[in-house]
Image (cartoon, rainbow, N blue to C red; front, side, top):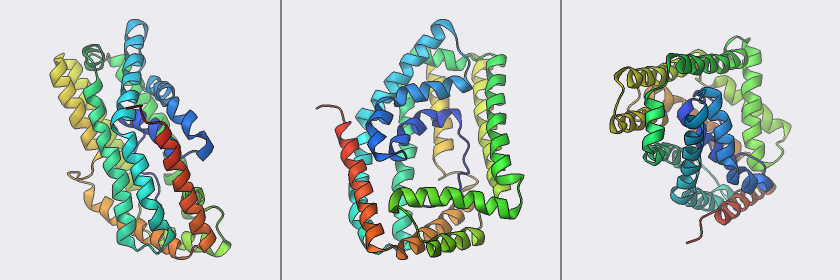
Length: 298
């Protein structure tokens, strides 16, 4: 629910989750197609970061399928429940604390994605613990490519360009929920973003630290030829560090930005018309209904 600028890297351990979460971000009529093909999208993204061939490629592809089914079985119902719970909230007034609780709902589900590590079979664990120097170098090149795009949009720009880029992202999220916004609402959102404490350079440094953590972990696993159980524990810990801010040295900055984002969203919601709130309810209701049809048959 919080309107903010993306500051986390699209790292390898979020690829699977990002594919599934696309079902909550795309056009409502496309949810079923997006989710049912989430494993294919995740696979395409994964192979952008890890160059695997032959039997290793086939084994990892099967692992992606199993992770997708794990998510459908273990996680999807909670998404639909969350969206149903939000419907009466968006019909009335929302204060910043309520918005933050809604944001926390999302983060709890993102953090739960670390459980997908349990689906990794021995073959997949062996592949991931024995990546070559060339494979890890390719991952670093892909990180660098994404970092260039981030810098072009948020760092190597004028303050005016930065604000407009952030506004585009914020409007996209708000319009997904409420439909079209009026000029006064757009101007209010622009003013809130201009006053926020979000720092693009700090966000960029955060990306680099997380990417370095991933690379160092995989290099250490390869150097020590780690056992499957050691690899599983290391990957689970790595995912937890990437998905959960509780023990992060960046937590204080994250909390400050989060609070401001909640205030911005609450102010925007306060400005919405009855028609816009009805649109928000309809959006959430339709998403929850479509996600419910994707649940596995009991």
